[in-house]
Length: 228
Image 1 (cartoon, rainbow, N blue to C red):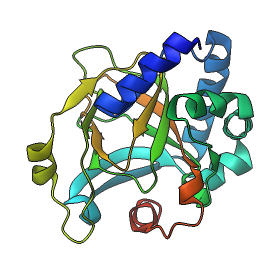
Image 2 (cartoon, helix red, strand yellow; image 1 turned 30 degrees about the vertical axis):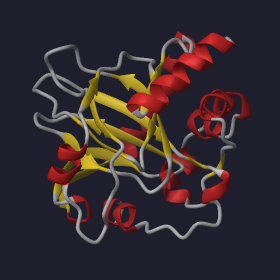
Image 3 (cartoon, rainbow, N blue to C red; image 1 turned 90 degrees about the vertical axis):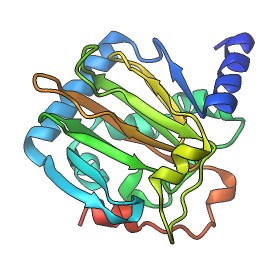
């Protein structure tokens, strides 16, 4: 990334709460990542269909795989997570140091939307940033795009999606295969728009901790509910 690229990305992150990286992963590497994800989904994917009470009863309808199964049975995905070159791109944009996630269950996850109306409903995440690698995305008209409401906070005692909508504007953006996006996940309420029949969306989600989060007390109740 050039200095001009970094400045532009920093501006997007500040204004909208997210940035999208194009051509960050070469086609050959993307193919390897996708093949590994498909094999893992076939063997270890778990169907989820419930309402998350901690985020105002928003829906979770998807197939996913947790960190343990990916680490024990994958190869490329765990290696990418540990790559200092890969995470240095996000460090340059955020101007923060990224450390391996202290809560291992969410270091990296594979999510797949497959059935009509599958969605990852409105929510915030536990840590400051989330990085998503798009392995397969629906065509325009089939849903599966990302929506984010920046500059909003998660009131865990009284979560309200409606309050967040009234506080800020909704930004919507679509991903192509191979795109990577960085999102301020603790201050941007976000979701994946439900997909339509005939569509499939497969992503890898990765999380690192910043310096100030290493010793921070974090409530992981949503992740525990996701993988119970």
